[in-house]
Image (tube, rainbow over all chains, first blue to last red):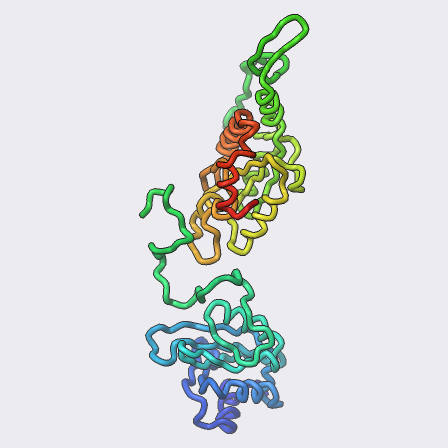
Length: 168
Length: 194
């Protein structure tokens, strides 16, 4: 029997009940949310459960929602069941003042570099990550460039020398 | 009816059967010629500039056209494009330099022997170009001193040839003591180069 979104949902509801919220199916892809401290339990269950078997992490990233008070950063996990060819999306939200999230790198090796990238661009602090440092940007960078905190063109930038180019 | 093909049928004779560089000014007599050493050195240097292309992106494609037979930079004494900085006189930075690439550009510059010159080809190398963003160096003159900027996105090979001729002008007229002068040392200090 094919693994449908209804089966996945009921299986998760059996285990976690009302802990999982925000059920959606945009373009047919099952999406849900939970408390950020529950992330490893949910991922482990999705991995271990013989019926679900989401053992492949295709993507891990973050989104910045500057207007959501206390839930500014969303960490998004994309999981794939290779046998059934089914994908799901799992989101957790964290505040931006102390963006601590448990690392999934022990469960999925693929999460190691993707968490480093997410840290690099959004500053999500993955607690327990073996090597949490910048992966793509220069190490001296002091900010997280993909947070929506910067004007498109900041006139006070010091690394842009406009002396010769007719702008001020 | 197909458009008739027109060939270039007007015969244009060569101005001279061979071409030779004009010698420096000097005093000539029977069996001797006296001139300034700096002029002779400058003449030799400017007609055998070995370029080191540091090509990272689309300007590099234009640079290939520049080196190929149609535009042929070899006419100006730059036949030998070298890929080791130790042998080169002119560093041509061609294309976008990311901030992470900046130490590499600087190291390549440091590995070149004096006297050395730098040409920044294209908008990105000169000023960051359209990449006004967190990851791109806003002009290579933030890390190394630049002698000639060639604007354009990308510049046409003719523009690069023009820039190259300006480098030749600089090379040919350079004072032999310039690289030992306090002003030059001061300039190098601003880039943290000893």
